[in-house]
Image (tube, rainbow, N blue to C red; front, side):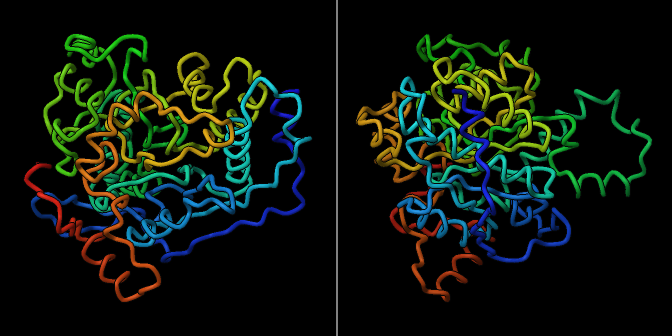
Amino acid sequence: MRLRLLSALVIGAFVVYRLWLSPPPAPSWLPLPVGKGTAAYRTNSTLGFGRIYVVSKKDSPRRGGLLQAANVTELQLTIPVQPEWTDQDLRGHSDIGRGSLLAWLGHLHTLREFLDSGAETALVLEDDVDWDIRLRSLQIPRVATAVRTLLSSESKPSVGSSGKTKSEEDDQVTRYPYGDPALWDLLYLGHCGDYWHGMDIGFEDGHVKPDDLAGRPHVSFKDWSLPNFENLHPWTASLLRNLGVPVHTRLVHRSVFPLCTFAYAITRESARRLVHELASLQPAEHKAFDIAILIACRNHGLRCWTVNPELFHHLPGTSIIGVLEHNNSTPPVDAMGQEQMETRGETPNIGCGFWSGDFDFGEDMERLEYLRQEVGRKGQCLKEWRDSSTEE
């Protein structure tokens, strides 16, 4: 039986849990005071997408931390209620682990929820992700500008030749911060590495070269919220050094070999393709959802772009898939970054995130308002234990 049959269950009514943190501002991009280390704009509560969806089971132990972080950053999340998948739903897939199959079904269910909405674009998050406190105020606006620049260079003859007035162009940016959704299919904002050569060779000097980057559509830009090389995941630092990328510089490039689907943005057309084409793949060939997405990007015409280093990374801890499949092994990418993560007190490639618990507020609304103002809006990393000189 193919996954299409499993994912096409008829649900009488979708019950959706929504976390309404604050009403999204009318424009997608709001002017901010410009100063050293700040961005010119601050994105809205859905990061410039139509929705932010979270793939999460109702009893997930990871949801509490996610909601605490979302409240401080003032993100508006939509968390579709996942069906109670039965043994009959899972029957016929003994060649794929139960945890991996449930992940497939969870993502496909969320994609269907998006297609049933009126939104044109969506960001899909897994519920165990961490992000930087400057996600809205600095990182996303710069990433969106980079994506628009790339799409413009790929699809338009030259700047200023679109025939639109300045006002019309501004309106277009307001509506589509990441460019026209007809021009892209998937944006990798959270992953465990897009390492160019895959995982078949090591990360010693020379594994990639500056010419590899020069020959690939990309934009680079300064991002002072990004840790220095010594505090990036070792494999990420090796990739950037060997590509000739300066410190505190982030890339947006055409995807090469992206692994993991911690956070990815989609359009209505790409979601439709994923639901119908991925659901029809034989799981024996692609036992993990993220590998199926990777192959769709590499071999099946999906126009995929990667933010590198990523903006979202998964939190350390027990893997639900691993528990269900009785697999206690640590993935190599996690093992390589584990010592550094424990020393830094931050998740890989995140400058000042929420994993440490420093920004938890419980049910204290006064503390929440303080954290929103000082941490989420001003981007101050108020961690007394941390030596900020090690990050910049």
